[in-house]
Structures are given as structure tokens and as C-alpha cells.
Length: 266
Image 1 (tube, rainbow, N blue to C red):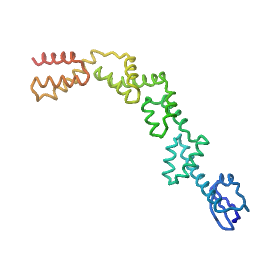
Image 2: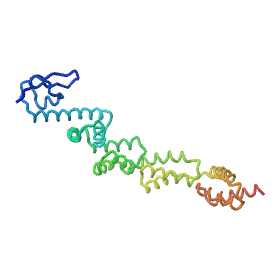
Image 3: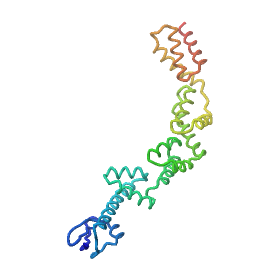
Image 4: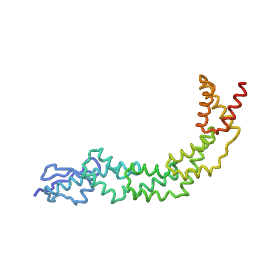
């Protein structure tokens, strides 16, 4: 049976060299030294040495994981991906994740809840986008569903109305119908439900400014009228009318503007 003849501290804090029968054998971390209660004069066989080496591999991987986690919260999938990138063996990664989970340093349920709270407080995303993000991070459906329970209807309305107001300002110089459509689509694109988006657009209480809408129609119409200048009169009117309608202007308003155009050209 081999004997540990010396335990020597390395220059690196928390690391030790183990000498067996007068010769350097392997290094261990301070945690391994304590966990296995290693001491000078202790008998050691190949099986124990293998356990010590495996435990030290986990200790090193654990420290690498702690460095990664010190920057921000991470999901289990993210930590695994990081350790894989460091070429750490799968069995060592599994043991490391188990240790991190026992200490609640990796906790997908906590991560998901924290992320949802942050998005409610500072973000502009709805449940669907949040769900997609958390799935990409590797969070399973149950902790994901539990976290999204925090995003109540009242919270969604608070965030959604703030988004809707910003979008209303962004699209205020567009045809009124288009403005409402883009606000609604913007909310849906950000992950809110279509029925909620429609309700919030209604709740904005937007009203078209007739003078502004007429000015916008005239500006857009003049550009289109010029664009189709090479067409015959009938085709030119049709193309212009069709394009203005697609931009969200009402048919009656378009016809009225075209009549004014005819009067000017007469």
C-alpha cells in the first residue's frame, strides 16, 4: 500500500501537490483535501487516487463555473455549454452541475422568475417573446409556466400600454388606419396576445386629426401621382388610388383628393 509522504501547498492559493512514497503523484484542491481528510502518512491505493483525481476535476470545473456565474445569473444549459467549451468531460460536467444545483447556484426556476420580473420592470416584451427566450436558455416548461404566472394581466397592461403610447408617437405621421394597425402589430410582434393588443389600441383613444390626415394624403398622393406620370390618365388614377388605400387612407378621402386634383388640372 502506498503512503502519502508529503502535502505541499502550491503558489496558487487553494491548490496542493500530493507526494506518494517520496514522489510527486497528483494535485488536489483545498476542498478535496478537506473532504477526503488527506494527511501525511495516510495509505492510498489506485482506487482512492482515481476518486481524488475525479473529485479534483470537479473542483476545478466548479471554480470555472463560479467564475462564469459571477458575471450574472445563468441557466443550467448555459453553464453546461460553457463547461463543454472548456473541454471538460461530460461526467465531470454532470457532477459539477449537481453540486451547483445542491447549493442553488444553478436554479432554472429562480432564473426564470428573475428574468420575468426584470422584463416587467424594464422591458417591452410580452409573454410569448419571454417564453421563447427562456426556452432558448434551456428552461423547462414547468418552471417557465410558473415564472410567467408573475406576469399578471395588470402587469401586461401596464407594460403594453407604455409600448402602445411609444408606438403611437412613432407612427403619428402616418395614415390613421395605418397608425392603429402598426401599433397593434408592434404589440403582437413584441409577444403580447392579439386580443390584448387590440384592446390597448382602443384604450389609447386615438382620434384622427382631419387637417393633418388631409395634408398627409396630399403629400403622399403628389409623390405617387408623379411616380405614375408615364401612365395614361385612367391607369394613373387607379394606381395612385390603390397605393394610397394600401397606405391606410380612406377611399372617400382619396376620391376627394383626386377630384381636387382634377379641378386643379382643369
